Amino acid sequence: MKAEGLFPAIKPNCKGMLQVDELHQLYWEESGNPHGIPVLFLHGGPGVGIEESYRTFFDPKFYRIILFDQRGCGKSLPRGCLINNTTWDLVEDINKLRELLSIDRCLLFGGSWGSTLALTYAIKYPENVLGLILRGIFLCRQHELDWFYKDGANRLSSKAWQIFTEGIPIEKQDNLIAVYHDKLHSDSYWTKVDAAAAWVLWEFANLQLVPDSRLKALLNSKFLFYSFAVIFADRNKTQAQIENHYFMHHCFFETNDWILENIHKIQHIPGIIIQGQNDQICPWENAYELHLNWPTSTFLLISNAGHASNEPGILEALIKATEDFKNACLQLN
Image (cartoon, rainbow, N blue to C red; front, top):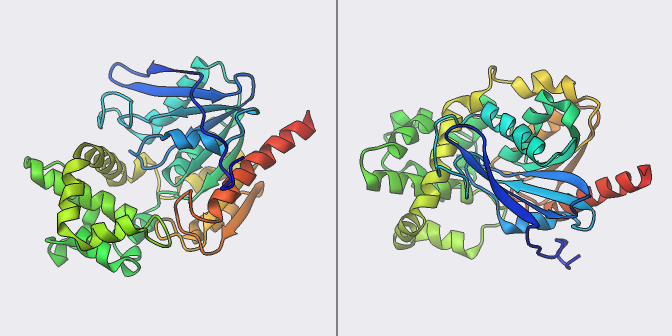
């Protein structure tokens, strides 16, 4: 392994496009050991897409590493499409990909929204899951959305919040998700571009406990902000519109606490919950509540760490979790 913990960069062994309905095609790729234990990486957002570096969380000599872009994301087509794009569509997509690749059961690995999707899939299809490695838990309850888009995180990132709420009357700030829905679907191209940039920047500003120099520059320069808005207009719009679409519909769950209400269905499945103590997007209390309701889970609270997977302590814990699962499999064999 490299000094920072990640395994060496690798190329996919194979890749393709999976037609999951009449409209959507999903980009998928497989790397690592073709005969190894399957691990399915579920990316965040929703709306972000996969990155090459995601392959390097896993020992390629042991794991059969599967990555895919969820509907409308990354290389999946049509890009940014919101039609037939719900949590339940994504759950069925996972099953279709599993069947395409002739996978019986797999390890699920996901952070933030990826943890939501992993838990939802496991609850719906527990017979297909070997275990879960989760980070930055998001259960998509109203108070979690309120924390990030109403009252909570705004007290921790005041400059970014000022940009996020700029020009929005105070009486409308009680439902910023709805306000941004209107902006992101405005007839004005520039309204959409500015709104998408502000939406994405608000998330970026809360990812890490210690903001890097690029983020500080974006927050303090209107020139850089508008450059970011224009240069990354398509990427920002895709992420912002898909995230907003899901949050407007409470991630398409039937009840506010659907995951915890159904967590008993995976009581026999092992899981590792890795959570930054200073996570400003998904506060640690949500992860701990999940752990209390899931007896076969292990809870790791990482001090001096925020939300991102590359935060000090979190990265090491994620790598250790994949190694621990590998070693458990080897011992059982």
